[in-house]
Length: 164
Image 1: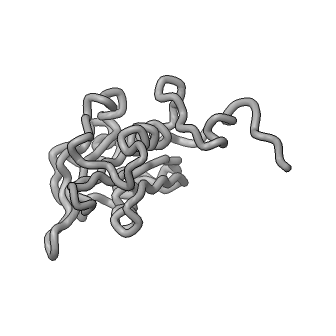
Image 2: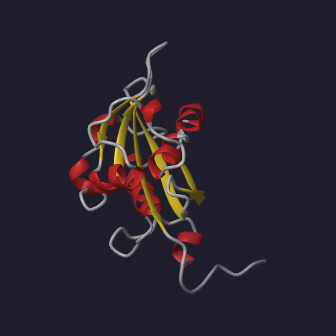
């Protein structure tokens, strides 16, 4: 029988969401918010989403309206910080116009997986930006649904930094 984890990170390892006041990782904070909204439900109704609840993350967040039939997914919001880090205009609308080697491009690349599994997807890794610099990133994309359970909104967040 294995002992329960102790020390730093033990609470997360046991399955409890991290405290939003202590957690610095953007993906864990947005996941914690989504899990709180979900509760015991199988999906999170879009009516429960409140950007004010994640106001300290909002500059790093984006909101996507998934493509309907043959249409194209579009942005409802792109935060100033993620727009700047990704070298796109904050008022950009077409998801397909975002370069893949940016925090926003990497995070929106999770869209098809989230739509398929109807559950958040977290990603992290490294990429080379348009100026040839090595960057580390962390991102998440979470789904929100209509009353029938169809995903009608995706909320994501991403940050990047130069490796130390």
